[in-house]
Amino acid sequence: MKYRIYLYSILISIIDMFRKRYYYIIELQYLGFRFHGWQKQPDVNTLQRAVERTISYVLEHKDFKILATGRTDAKVSANQTYVELFLDHEPLDIEAFFPVFNANLPQDVKALSIEETNADFNIIQHPKIKEYIYLFYSGSKFHPFCAPFMYNVVESLDISVMQEAAKLFEGKHNFKSYCFRPTEHTVFEGEIECCEIVENDIYTANFFPEQSYLLRVRGEGFKRNQIRLMMGAILDVGKGKMTLDFIKKTLDRNEERILLEHIVPGSGLILNAVIFKD
Image 1: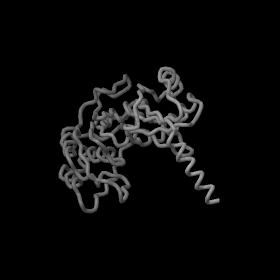
Image 2: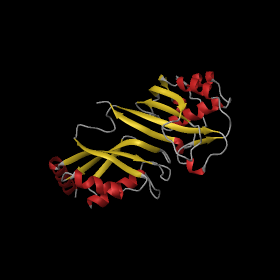
Image 3: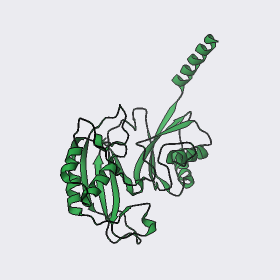
Image 4: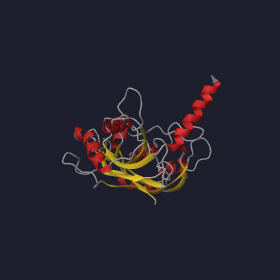
């Protein structure tokens, strides 16, 4: 029996050695409001599940796998993100595949482009900058159609002090206090190259409030729920519940983290852009 297993493992190794694999990068955008995040999970609707089902339907087989630049949480949207498609056996006819793939994706998911790459490219490890934005509005309850896109804060906010708070996050810091359920392997150090509160002129609609704002955060990578915790802290500063000095204390901590409990809803968060460095 052991001899058969040994021969089988050798056979699999030989097949893998001579198997031809093809690599493609697909640029996507999606509205995340009805999805339970990117990562495939049993019994819930996720973006990975929707994309894989569509690829399988178009190709009429399952001899492929996909990897994303990152895993967005439930209700989080993406204006621009990428997945890498690994395809075995035969190359993809891109011109034939792409329009059919796009037509069969759910209506709240769209493929923007596709191009061939090679085994040297690693979508996870390749250096890249991610830009997230978080849309919010301060005032009386907004139109229900706004719910998939922005967060409604009923209390009045001091926007100017919130802008000061946002700037404190720029640079290199220890973000231990801004990581939800960290593990023993979590790396807390990171660098944010831009963090600002500005008036929203990027996403508009006739049912949006007359004036809304956004938090823009740009960096190489972020911890689990980091931006939603940052947004919660900045809003608490704007409400007068938290001071700028307290924000400073939450950063660069080598000792036990300060527990922050204000995690804003995922529906206001958008992965706005992913820029590969070369």
